Amino acid sequence: MNLLVSYIVLYIFQLAYGNENEDRKILSISRRRFEGTIDYQAKHDHRIRELEQKFRIHELEQDTRILELEQIFRKREMEQDTRIRELEQIFRKCELEQDTRIRELEQKFRIHEMEQDTRILELEQIFRKREMEQDTRIRELELNIRNHKLDQADRIRKLEHAIQIQSKQIGDITEDCTFGKKDNLIVNNAFVHSDMNTTISKTADRIDEEANSKELKHVHIKRHGKKDNMERMSDRKRLLLRRHQTLIFDDVQINLGSAFSRNSGLFSAPGHGIYVFSWTVVADEYGFVYTEIVINSTPYGSILTNSQDVRDFHTVTGIVVADVNKGDEIYIRTNPNYPIKGRIVSDSSLRTSFSGWKIADI
Image 1: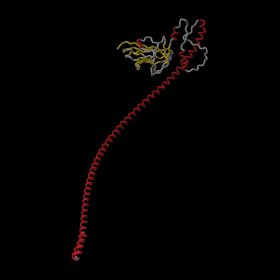
Image 2 (image 1 turned 180 degrees about the horizontal axis):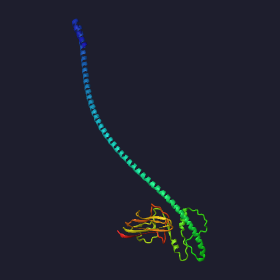
Image 3 (image 1 turned 120 degrees about the vertical axis):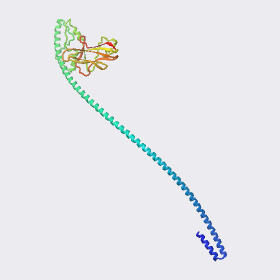
Image 4 (image 1 turned 180 degrees about the vertical axis):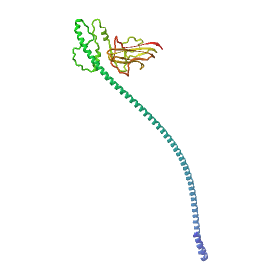
């Protein structure tokens, strides 16, 4: 604009003070310059308009981009809010699950603690029971030791007595043998020892077994016409017993239906009914035996045969009446709770026996 004003002023000045040619020349130059200026101004204005248009387009693009970014931001913000709400729901849900799990674990812990307390109480009861059983067992063992000492003392006295009897018998047998050659004397079941000074070096149990096996009692020396007692002694049986031992009667006289087993000593009832059972036990000298009749492992009756205080045989018979089912097992055994001393005896005159019969059907 300043350049245009300058040209106009110069042109007016030339018109006022210059000649016509120069004026024309100046006017021509001015016109060219003015036209160039106008062209430049037009180009400049056109460039400005283009730049303004580009600016407006760029501004529109920026506004559009800004709107898009704002939409993306609002969308992202909404997505983030939704995600936050989802995470909050998940957190609350997880928190509830954790609280539920904690309560379950606390409940399980209390249950486990109660179970442990119950188990501890049971173990304490078992321990007290075991302790009582051990105390009872110790008392039983102490009682057994005392009884064993008493048995040993009795056995020693018995062995001493047997040795005295043996010495007397040997003297009697020697004397009878001396006179037997003249009087045709028969000596049965007697054992003559020529050396009376032999040292006895065996144990007490071994001596007791030999004394009983060789019938170290009254040796019966009979003349012609008195051999019945000798035959009775020859078939005599002695059985050494222990606690809770089943008696097996191997000499079976009557066994209808084969209900009695001579191998096991068990009688199996062939049918349901009322039965009578009887058993007889003969105790050896200085001995005692507790026996009982058992039906299916349950004691039903018991007896005591006692020869402890006398040098003689004692016989006791027990009898029971029982309601027995088919297949029930009945047998005789020694009492499992009481000690036993000595042996039981059985021969033709002192018979240890077991019998039973059915008196009524049911």
